[in-house]
Length: 207
Picture 1 (cartoon, rainbow, N blue to C red):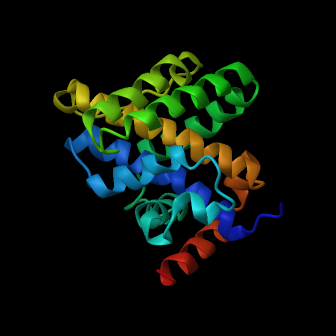
Picture 2 (picture 1 turned 120 degrees about the vertical axis):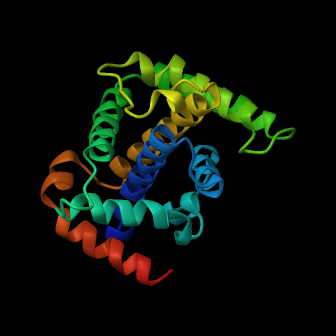
């Protein structure tokens, strides 16, 4: 399948969106529930035929697209190094995960079980966050280097926040897998920022 600049930009925005939400939860204790839900939904789009199908309405990626523009533009007033650090770490961990087919199968199997739980609980229910968070803890968090989330201890020590953060990090990994499948790579991330920014701005205008 041939992938476009739009596809790569949406997938990269998916990583930035999850990272931004992690940052908001860890520093303020909350973020938009609708953004969490739309981000976690991507974990259960197993049979989608296109990148846009995975993310649904592009408007659902508004947070990620805006964050990507802010972080990649070089504007120090809008730059938040923690978000950039999360994104780089996620891309690095995805590369390690690709070599571990057993872990990939484990994640897929556990997500199927979690989807069955969604017959009884909404995607934003704390039980679902706990289930997805457990998948992350049992798999991705065993890879090194682990992602160290910075923030306020009063928020980071709340179990539901911890589960949300782990769930969002797993969704970020999912977007990183997709980005790589679309032809994204680390060098492109570092040197192709202008193209990503321009494409993100065009996508936002179309919302």
